[in-house]
Length: 440
Ligand code: SF4
Ligand code: SF4
Image (cartoon, rainbow, N blue to C red; front, side):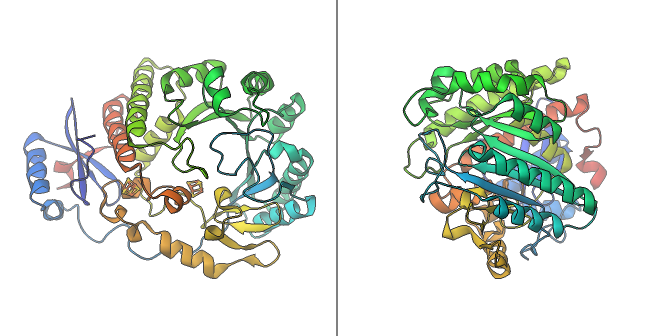
C-alpha cells in the first residue's frame, strides 16, 4: 500500500514497466512522464511543490470541480422497496432481515404506481430512466413488481422516454416465469451470492438456518441460459469469512453470470461481518489477484467479467471525476413500502437520508442540504486525498454509520487499476493517452 499512500492532493505518481506516469487529480487526467520529468514530479511532491510544477506545465488552472454543491438534477432513478420482508436471515443484513428495523410489510400496488408516475411523468422526452426493485426480498411481492414494471413501460413509451429495469434478489424465489418476465423487459438481475456453497450458506442461510445456495443455483439456471435482453450478475458481499475472491469469481464466471462484483461489508447494523483493516488488506491482495487474471485474459482476447475491474477501466478511460460517490439524494432516490422517499435504498427507514414522501413530494430543502453537506470538498480527510474524484468520498450510508475505515483499501485498488490501465492501454484500451511533453 506504500505506492498508493497519499502524498499530494494535486497528483499521484504511478510507475509501470513502461515508465513513469502522473495522475492529475483535477479532471482525473493521466499522462506519461519521461524519466527526468517523473523525477522532478517526485521531488516536487516530497517538497510540497507539485501544484507549481503542474501549473508550469499548463496542467493547473481553475479547478474542474468547485465547491458549489450540485443543483438537484432531474430524477432519473428510483428503487422501490416493494417488500420490506425477507425469507433469509443473512448475518450482516443492512435491512435487518429485510424489515429495516420496523414491521414486515409489502408495498401496495397504488404506492408503486405513484412512484412510477413520479419517475416517468416528470422526465424530459428522450430521458433514460432506471426503475429498480429491492427489498427485503422483492420477489415476496411479485405481483406489485410486475404491475409497476408494466405501468412504467407503457407510460415511458407514451412519453418517449426509456426505462431500464433492475432487480436485486436473493434468488431463492425465482421461477421460470420470472425468467420470461425479466427477459421480456430486459432486466438487469443481480443475485446476491457470497461464494461457493459452504461459504455462501454460512453467511446467507434461510431464517431457520438451512443453506440457500443449492436452491438459488437451481433457480438461477434458466435465467443464465436465457440472457439476451436480460443480464444476470452475481454480487458478493465480502466479510472476513469469504475472502477467497478468486475462487468465487471463477466459480461464478464459469456458471455463466454476465458479471461478478465484490463489495466489502463496511457497516452492518450489529457490527457482525464488518471488515477490519487486516481483512481489507487481504481483500486488496485478492482483488489484485483477480485483476491480474483479468489482464491476462484481456491480452489473450478472452472474456473475464470481473465487474469491479471492468468498471474501473471504463471510468479511468472516461476520466471520471465527480464530487459524490453515487447519485444518492441527487438523481436517485429510494422509496419505502409506505411511500417515504430516502436518499437511496439503504436509507429507507433512516431519518439521516429522509427526502420527503410520494404524497408530499420530494423535500427540496433536505435534498439541497444533503448535496451541500455530502460534497467531497466538505469531507475529511477526502478533501486532500488524491483519489477523491474517483472515489467521491465513499458510500454515504457506510460513512454516516461507521466513518471511513477502508481508505487504504480504496486507494490501493485504484492505484492498481491505474497501473493495469496503463499496462493494457497499448493493447487498445486507450490509444489517445497523452504525454506531459505534448501538453507542455
Ligand atoms: S473516502 Fe475515498 S476520497 Fe475519502 S479519503 Fe477515503 S479514499 Fe480518499
Ligand atoms: S449511498 Fe451507498 S448504498 Fe446508497 S447508492 Fe450510494 S453507494 Fe449505494
